[in-house]
Image 1 (cartoon, rainbow, N blue to C red):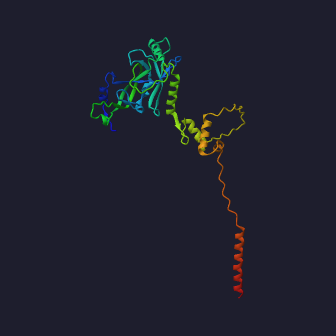
Image 2: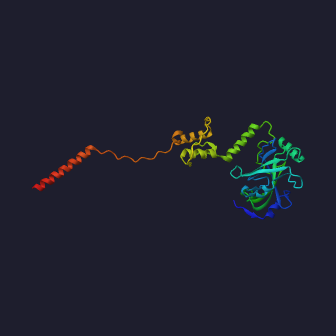
Image 3: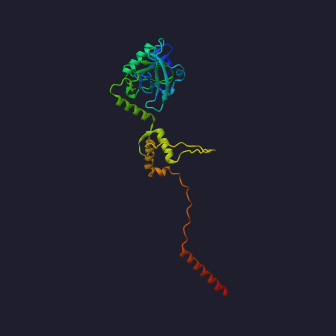
Length: 316
């Protein structure tokens, strides 16, 4: 579907009440946060590549975070004239995630040092404050195309923010991205459901499907097991000038996921685990087939007959 490049001024003019001085656009998102009351930390989704309530989409590979990482202060409600409540750390882009997103960890100030930080901690723990919002400066923006079934009506298509610079991130009570989910902030009796949802999200982001069995396994485990099973591995030999004492090896642990994966691969290849782990034997040249004794005797008899006829002709 075609898209139209627009000026930054046009885009900012459409963001009613969401633009601060200096052309900073504010976008709020529900957070998959995980509150740690001892460390006073929580994991948030700063931005995600999904359509928000304004029908805007921020492309995560174009969201610049380098300058933000130099001064990652955490604010309350985008109030740049108030004291910060902490800092953001571990800003990470998950460009293979579903959806593509940018996450960061909120680190609140120590208890008793900042009243707003203590208030935010109480709300996050209670689940009444579990969203964050980013402020960014748009650099490259495109207007999204109006769907065909909406062209005869008034329809605001929204914008696609191709490139932007992240300026700040704040804790806010109202999100803009309705599709984002909460992981564990203020959970009351839903711990099992929340944990299951976190596992599903991790699987979608970092697991792979086995080509033969169709099972889902961690991508790193799959690659290691596959290389081991198919012999696609590198062995490095290092000579030791002097004997080295080797400590006794610990007891062999029970078969884990790695061994199970090798068993699955062996089954798919129609072999045993021992067969796929054994080094490949060099191919031996095939021995020539044994000579047929009867054929040799017949050939000798024919040769003798020919010699006898020749001798008779010469004698005549």
